[in-house]
Image 1 (cartoon, rainbow, N blue to C red):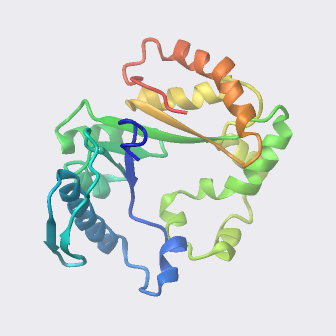
Image 2 (tube, rainbow, N blue to C red):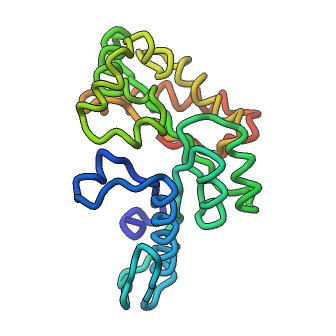
Length: 244
């Protein structure tokens, strides 16, 4: 991907989700064990990105003479999804960028301290549901993204769709609309993005909800949203870039 995108690719990693992982039949480890496994995986990936043959004997993984044959001229940066002190302290020294879904200034401060690189990228991810009809946008967000309000600690542990349905059965459309910008207006999205800039994030990734309407959203982003974000970003210390 780094070769195909001419240096624009960032590899995003995280500690996994029960929904995706338990199906292989190896059990669902505790978060401490998942972090151990992820730490080893990052070590292996980083060595592969260095070039040459990699042999690795860890607690969880073994690699015998692995090699990446097509290395890009620009090394692939690694971003890590984190949510608290445990993941920050463990992975900030290992990777290139922070990825988070909450605009927490203390998360950014801890990351900079643990990594020793205040200039590293801090990427915030925001779901949005753009639609010419606000009611339609709220309904779609409630249908497809009502799990978002549960938070990572809950979502990572749920094993299947029935569990997600049970955990979100009392989430109302208005609850979703309070946490996700919905509808045709620019201002709610700008406000949501500004919270990340104020917290010290350097980049924001906007995730449009739903399969339909992606092209219309991109048109809205080009004509209205991106100019509004650029205008709002002036004077914000953390607003080095915005990714759509």
